[in-house]
Image 1 (cartoon, one colour):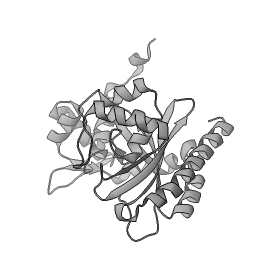
Image 2 (cartoon, rainbow, N blue to C red; image 1 turned 30 degrees about the vertical axis):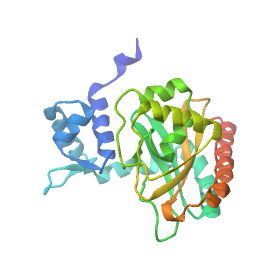
Image 3 (cartoon, rainbow, N blue to C red; image 1 turned 90 degrees about the vertical axis):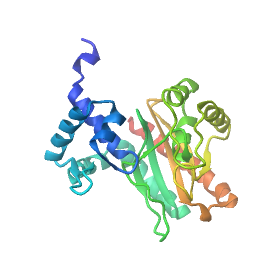
Length: 256
């Protein structure tokens, strides 16, 4: 029996709605979610009511919009035991101590890149990303670094499957130009990008390729733009490469 015959469409639709809520501002109304996931409003509404009953989403009674609920935190402790996070966290902690800047671990999924772990700098001014946040693959160092690690055919499938969204005035939205950029950055092996997803933020990121290409991810050092300098870039890039190599070697050694 083929795999597709086992897929439960109702669960798939609910997951799409949850993923859509993770994007953008983190809350949305029924009509907006309907457009995002390509389902009729009545279907989306039934899904939201079911998720709300189980506390996976909650409704703002004033705006009528939905956001993720506290019930979703029930999976957080299990997620922290995921082998990729368990192996990466101590290496990320060492990187945080060396750089004193925010460290982000992200992996590719069907709609972009998702932050699966973040260690925050103790400094008073910091970035606002959080675990569970989605990043675009076509803009910003976190997403671009993931593309850098991919074969060109897979890069093209991400860039040319749908229009590329603009986040700031600096966001590149021409897929041909983004592809050219990524192929050039492959030679460097990393990306340093400012203000393409979040205004006033700079990030330096390297790709992570795990299980011989089964998982594509990135490791990022993020900071406010005013704290970035070419000197820091020269200092941080080798540290990122070293940390990424440690993560992949540790995963290979563990048989994950």
